[in-house]
Length: 412
Image 1 (cartoon, rainbow, N blue to C red):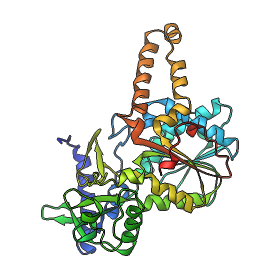
Image 2 (image 1 turned 180 degrees about the vertical axis):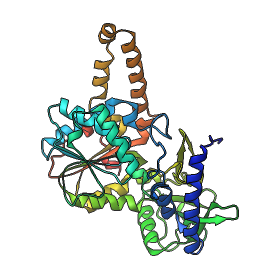
Image 3 (image 1 turned 30 degrees about the vertical axis):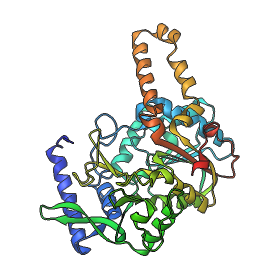
Image 4 (image 1 turned 60 degrees about the vertical axis):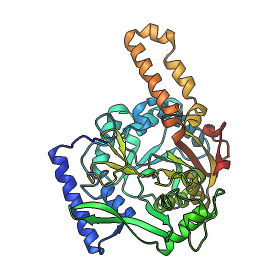
């Protein structure tokens, strides 16, 4: 794929990050795990994708998230949060708040529903993103900015609602490969022209146990615990199978889950159940990069200037929530969840011919834009089916609005 060239300033930042990672690889004997590489390219202070000064979200960035597409996304989320506020403290804790648009929309919508948030906490380590979030909320929800606080770390205890939209996909993953020689960990090395390349080594005990358990629990194959050979398991039509395992994401869910007192956790991201994620035909994994609204597979391209992500194994996330003692409140597609939370009713009210006629051509144009955005959020060919929603709770009734129809928790 032909990718656009970044400006000179961006290239300087990328080269500086490349040098830092190269030095780390040399110090580690010529190899680092992909999880370490992914952490550096995304979160290296001042240089990583989420820690640097470059714009990430929206038309001028590299990708568009659901809250950027349509204010209806935050309105639907508010319906679910409002229901939970009836049983928990009116507090929201958002991780990975992006541009701040979701927070602004959610704060306004909760106020309109008569269930305002008493406190809205954003856990954000990036100084540049904090500033953008502050500006966005001040501009779009100026009357609500007073309840927003920014935190560097997870609160010791959370009573309220935890939100993570497109959070888990940006957590570093370990990459593994199975071939005739067994199970290997796939990491990163340097080649002569000062660029990165894949390199394998024997899998350690932690990775071996995690992969063995994950693949061994699946119905379409039962890999040998001793060999994990694709010839016997059906993995990899070419005799080689590669994928990822999100141990950091699982650990995050367990940690936040243990901190959750009475309340709920709602996570929205792209991914699959384990049986889909690790299907033998998906033998190259799910790692991709996002650069200037192009999705490609060269995760070593321009370190620090592109987003690097992996899809989410929601079966593993469900297990992590259970390990933390949480109740699973639902799992479904983004499309079904949005419909359950009233997206179509809200869209119809905002785009009715009567309203458009009263407000003129500008309103008609805006109505058409909103219909197009809703199509992107709901369509199976776009975000509607690829994105999933999972919810956990402690001390809440199992009647979450967003999972009233089409709950798929049985597929996990």
